[in-house]
Length: 99
Image 1 (cartoon, rainbow, N blue to C red):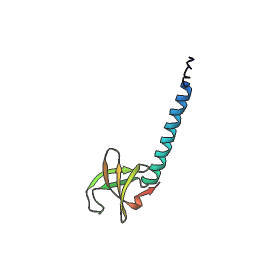
Image 2: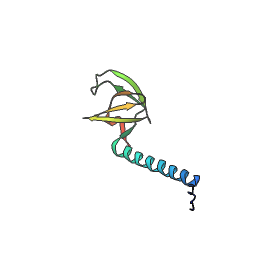
Image 3: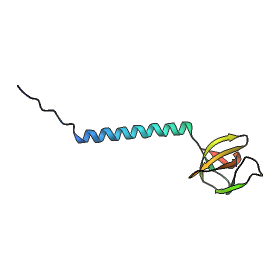
Image 4: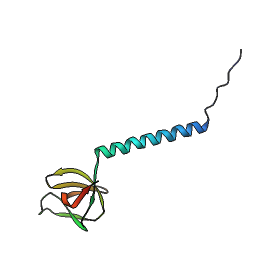
């Protein structure tokens, strides 16, 4: 009785397979993020982020021009934005440009 040796898959093939899988998953995530998440860039030199979408709302923190924020909700002329580590507040729509 002859026994056939199983050929071991080349380690290079495993590396190539894993690299391809990581690349594919990253591409799908990037596409998903572009379709379902909205980001904006702050335009004015300084923007007050408020607790509500009214002018009289409490100022929570300040953002500067060029800051990238996540847009969670749109309410009339205001965006509800999120900035790093859960800082959430409202800004005027005219103070940001959707990217």
